Amino acid sequence: MPTIDDFIRPKEWCSDFVNDIGKVIREWAEDKLMPIRREIDGDWQKHELVKPLMKEVLVDLGINPAFFPAEAGGTDMPELMAMIAIVIEELARIDSGFSVAVACSVWPLIPILAEPHRNMELCIEFGEKFCGDDLYVGCHAMTEPASGADVENVGVMKGRTIATSATLDGDEWIVNGHKIWPTNSGEIADLFGVVCSTNPGSTDLKDIAYIFVPADAEGVSVGKPYLKAGMSADMNTDIWFDHVRVPKRYRAHGPGDDVEYWRHCISTGNIGSAAMCIGVMKNVYEIIKKWTNERVIAGKKLKEHSICADMLSDVAIAIESTSAWTWAYIREHDHPEIYGMDPWSDEFCLKTRGLAVHATTAVEWACSRAMDFMGSYGYSREGDIEKHWRDQKVIGLWMGGKALKILENARYWYETETI
Ligand SMILES: Cc1cc2nc3c(=O)[nH]c(=O)nc-3n(C[C@H](O)[C@H](O)[C@H](O)COP(=O)(O)OP(=O)(O)OC[C@H]3O[C@@H](n4cnc5c(N)ncnc54)[C@H](O)[C@@H]3O)c2cc1C
Image 1: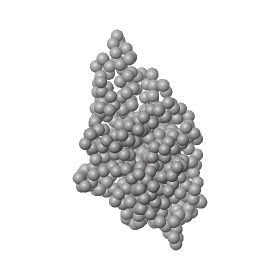
Image 2: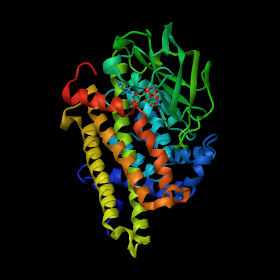
Image 3: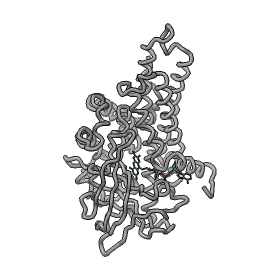
Image 4: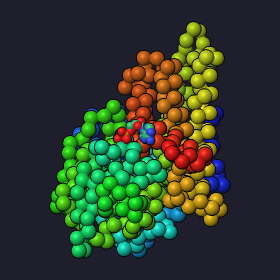
C-alpha cells in the first residue's frame, strides 16, 4: 500500500545521507512535535513550548552547525539546498510554523555561508554562537512598513524604497530604520541580517547593503508578537534600529556583491517554501487517506465515491508534481557545475519564483478540497486539516506574495521589460 514515502524524490538526486537526515528529523518530529501541535496556537505570545523545541533541533540535532564551515565549528554538510529542503519538509508535515522558524535561523546567513561566496571571517565570528551549546537564532529582516514586496523586487524597484539606512562612520556602520514581520523577530532572534540602503532613494544596486546586527546591540528594540491566523510557532514583530552601531566588517560583502548574494536568500526561500508545501500536503494525504477509508457515506466508504476519488487523485497529483519539480530545482541549486546557472544569480531567483507559485497554489487547494470531504470534522481543531489550512495560506503571501512571484517568473521566461 503506498505511503508518503512513495511520492517522487529521485534517488539519484537525494543522497542516502540526506535521506538519513530526513529520517532523524521525522522521528524527532513525531516524537516531540506531533503530541503538542494542537497546543502551539496557544503559545504564540511566549513560545514557552516552541523555544525549547527549537533548541532541540537547531542545537542538539545540529541543524544550525550543519551549514557552517569546519573552521567555524560547524559540520559543513554538502548539498546545502537538499539539506534545507529535507528538514523543512519533515517539520512542515507536523507544523509549518515550526518549520519556518527553524529554517529562518540560518536563512539570513546564506549570503556569507554558501560557497563560493563564503565570508570566512564572519562565519568564524558568528559560528562561535551558532555552533555553541546554547540556542542562537537568526532572523532575516527585509520587510518594512511602507515597502514589502518592493524590497524584493530588485529588477524594477532597484532598492529605491528601502528606507532602513546604513551610514559608515569610521570603522562602524550606523543603522537606522524599522522592519516588520521577520520570522523569529521579537524575543527569539539573536542576530538580524538587515537589508539596508547606504543612500535611501537611490536606484544604484551598489547602494543596497546587507548588514548583520546583533539583537543585543544598543539601539535595537522589538515590539510585541502579532496575532495571526496561523503559523503560531513563527513569532513576528516590529524591529526598530535607532542609531545602532556595528563593526564595518558586519557588512556581508560590499557594494554590488551584497545585493547579488542576498538574492541567494530569495532563491533558497522559493525552493524552501515549496518543500514546506510538500510537507503539509503529505500530511493532508495521510489524514484524508485514513478519513475516506473509515467514513461511510450513502452505504459505502467515502473513497469509493467517484466524486471523492476525483479529489483524492488530484491531491496525489499535486504532491507528485510539486515534489518532482522541487527536487529538480534542488539538484540545479546544488550542482551548478552540471546545470550552469549560479544559484545566487538573478536568473535562478526569477525561475524559482514559478515553483513557489505552483507549490503554494497546490497546497492551498489541497487543504481546502480535503476539508470539503471531511465536512465539519475538517473544520474542527481535532481534525488537524484546519491547522494546515490556516497555516499554509501565508506561504503564498510572504516573499512578495503571488503577484510579485508571477511577475518575476514572467520576467525570466519572457524577458519582460516594464513589469
Ligand atoms: C508569517 C510571516 C512570516 C514572514 N517572514 C518574513 C521574514 O522572515 N522576513 C521578512 O523580511 N519578511 C517576512 N514576512 C513579510 C512578508 O515577506 C511580506 O509581508 C511580503 O513580502 C509582502 O509584503 P507586504 O505584506 O508589505 O505586501 P505589499 O508589498 O503591500 O503587497 C501587496 C500586494 O501587492 C502584490 N504585488 C507585489 N508587487 C506587485 C507588483 N509589482 N504589481 C502588482 N502587485 C504587486 C503582492 O503580491 C501583494 O498581493 C513574513 C510575513 C508573514 C505573514
